[in-house]
Length: 76
Image: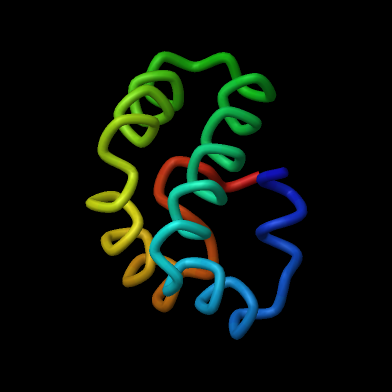
């Protein structure tokens, strides 16, 4: 899912992160898939936090995605 998200156009990425409920679902899917791919402690902590605080991370990731075209700690 992280690879799929990173392959999308920037407009699609931004639209997915702008819609609040869609934002949270996309965050959870991308974060957990990034964790299962990398198995690192940082991606696990971020995935766990996003599961419960997804809207907060969603707005931060929206800004990060505008700048770098991927989510924080989820570059595939």
